[in-house]
Length: 355
Image 1 (cartoon, rainbow, N blue to C red):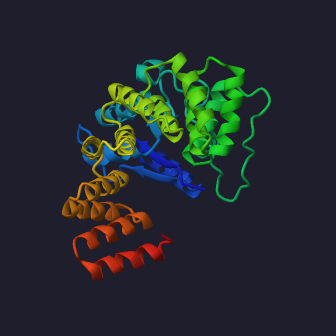
Image 2: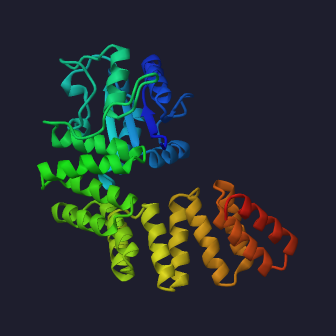
């Protein structure tokens, strides 16, 4: 089971509460990042921006101190912007200290908070338990709870549990919940949009396309659904239509690395190599550590006979993430450069990795 990638935002005045949440999440198998060293001083730094972007679960610890912190507000507004462009992301506020309704930022008002009646915090242990339940994580030492749809479960709860399972790469389980949500409310954009993504993850491309189309008929302004539509179309060998979908995603969110990367691969299939290279360069301008784009860039440069540049790109990709295919491509590039002994070493490494 893949680890859920979690970002926790908090005020340093709530360190003890935050650390208890983080421990509970990690004990349940989540990969958690939070600012342990008070890096912030009024603007989002590159480390925090990177972690916010790559972690689909955002938890904000709410307290008067947090709500008065420009740093926490910046992180939370950034996460909310990402959520608006990709509704498979999760935003989960957890109340740590008593609040008043006027304290809470307006853009957070519609998110269900983990808190006791009267805007009071739960005891720390209970808050941790409820957070794990919400994220469909199993506390250490306990048996996993059933994930099937429950009688009388509301659409919003089904969608949130489905998203939590998707964040753990448990897509088959998520599909059952999201299908039930779409049956209960055929006008739920979140049910259809997330269902389209989950169906694509298990390779049911025609069904994924149909779900994306249902979502886009309800709301055509969410970039991630257009990107998912493009992926389904490409897998169905409808490359020209896929490019239209990727371009629509990029119109809505020009900083979407997945959409740029996917557009690049569609352009490769259409043999538009210079345009593909430009798309991968755009991917890396947004996310310099995007290993797939470095690997793809190397592949295209090799095809354009630009071997030295191809080798440099493949080395960047391998430094970020080793795969057998990248070692094989590196071996081919080294052979083209006449570096035979290095090529043989790269081929051996590819074979060790199952290539």
